[in-house]
Length: 256
Image (cartoon, rainbow, N blue to C red; front, side):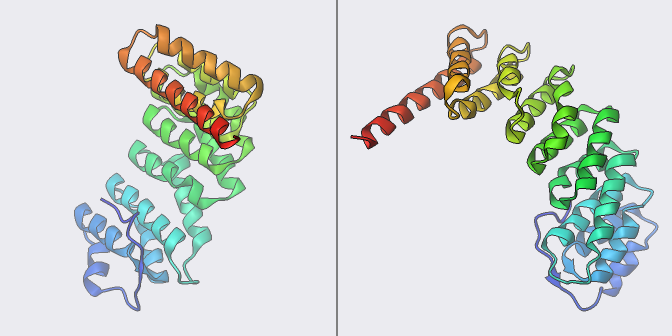
């Protein structure tokens, strides 16, 4: 439960009940307060949320991260302390004891948009023990469009968890890493069927680049469609090839 998708509305005052709930002995009440504060376009709401982001309860901290970023990204009040919010969210990402809170902070990394944030996230990447948090963090770094992250993501294409390997290859494709074709082809031969299915849309996108990249991507899709041991993977690869053929035919017709 969080306020990440609720655009904050202008609020002149923080209701007394919300202030009371934010200071309550009950974690559930504090968490509910964090949700409501994230919907208030108000600098005082941000100040209360910054305190709740340091709460003893991980659920309160995680909800506060979502609400803080709601104010950071969508709040229109100039007095909202956006730099403080960014620093607080990065602290949760780098050092919070709860993987839930780190995962919540990782998902908001693109909204922070600072070089320092990317540096800290890459440092966390090397120390993060939980695969779910790694996936969120790698995906977020891919959306940040910062080449600095490439060398930290590359080692994860051989991670023991297939979901992390898939996330790493997707992020490298977004970042335009030079080795992304090799990594996508390697993913197409992964032991995990889910990872191989992830490779199909990546190879499909790489095919559009033309030249040698296009040939290698199409060859990999052909191998998957003909030889993969999983029926779903074969069907997905075959569907991608049909779509490529359709696009080529449409392009030829448009030139007539």
